[in-house]
Length: 286
Length: 229
Image (cartoon, rainbow over all chains, first blue to last red; front, top):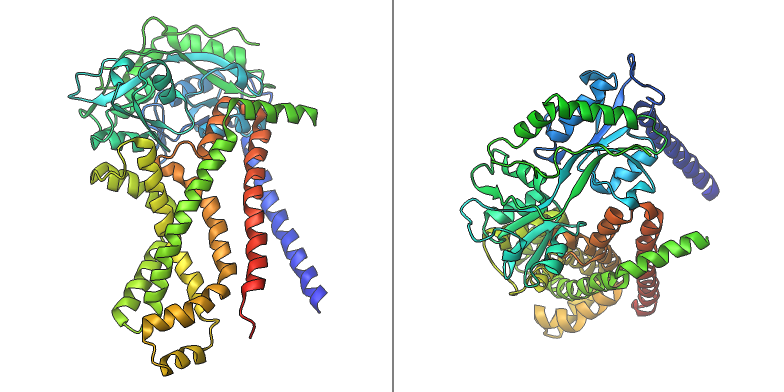
């Protein structure tokens, strides 16, 4: 009797596992089935990974997606032959971007994805389509923080898993107090309550936060970027789309829609991208 | 295999992996002590003959057992520290460390209370009646007769709570403790995404090493300490 119940349990377990596996397989098929499609895509879909929680860059509001990253993604997708309703958006949190690409769950990633040599070992990049720089977000009425050197003895917030705050402590102001939070929204909450004096990360992310209706007029970007981050389009190493994506980015910059996308994403914050680096020229494809 | 070995070496050279685990051990240690004290008081309240205390204990347990730990942590940092501006220390690292210990302790106290109450249930009612019969009032009876036997009966469930606490100590990241393991793992994935399997194994194996001895020890202890009836 005892063994019989055990076998029964095993069978049930195997059945559940099979179900779960087939469910995974199903979603995979929906995602990565656009291989080999170039300019004429027909009725196929393209899966694009973006951030869902970064206002001004990749932000999900109900069932619409807004932000600079999504605008560039739409433009590039259109040039690759996909209309807006052929785009399948997928959330690509920072820690999962390489996995999503190397397992072909997404075709492209536009998610504040900095081009680095380490990442090039597992994924490929097209672009860059934007050059961001580390900057500071402070309260609107703050006048004494003009750059990272002014943070001596101040409180600074950043998100876990980035070294942007540590860089300030190591290179600019050793006496700064660091708070690390899971997300930028928590940092802005702490900034608004006055418990931290500044939030640090890439300037365009800060501008997007400042442009949110709830924060408008309460915070501002200092506007003195002190690093360069090249935002690229993450693609699987097997992808053949790199050249086409670069051509689309160049076209977007040339016809003015690139400028337009930045302006609309950061409206009302007075933010302008670092002019000596922007707009960038896409690198040659590997 | 040698390839993996070099990946692990690279991770251990560029990051303070052991230091991060040490932070989690410290969080667990202080939170466990605090949770044990608060949990014991709660258990006493719940088995006391005073209805208002019983109600208060039961309410605490229901409230904290059913609140996600992350929410408690975020409430402590953004609510208590951010809005109410209450500080537990002047410098940020110890301030948030203490908030994290506090959050872990109030949450796990609810589970400790229930583990001890399950131990109380192993003590036959005759013991309480006998204690009353020789003239002990509630507190002395609990202290001398009931709780010593109850603790010996609740070693195994308390061990389960401790194991959960060790693993939950990673939620301290939500309270701004950035030196602990889950934050370090995020940093590693951000900057060394090419060795993601080695990163995963580092932390998975690390927690197995931490948790398995606790499980073995509490199982052995519960066998040895249980009151033979």
